[in-house]
Image 1 (cartoon, rainbow, N blue to C red):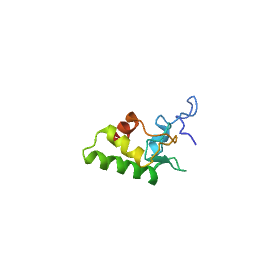
Image 2 (cartoon, rainbow, N blue to C red):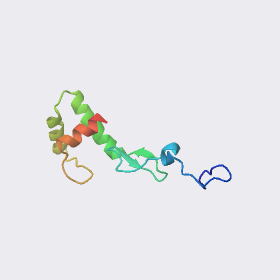
Image 3 (cartoon, helix red, strand yellow):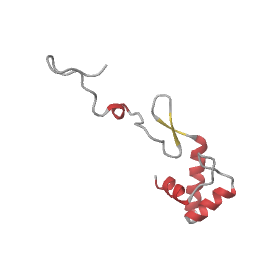
Image 4 (cartoon, rainbow, N blue to C red):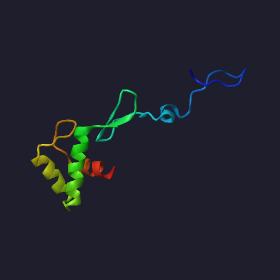
Length: 96
């Protein structure tokens, strides 16, 4: 039930923060490595977390972003869309 105003006021008021106040994901695509659980909370996606770990390890070895993309391609790793990762995708994944 929505919180109500004082008696005599115009009626119910929506919670201004809504789902965020309850720790739920508020919408859009979940960032790579996570999925939206049944309760609306972000949960780690084990397969995508493994890909992130591979990319982070490659960067830690000193590889450029282009080389990280090439390594993922060599391993046959694909994006959620089933395509090879683009440079910008890998940059965003590692920045998050």
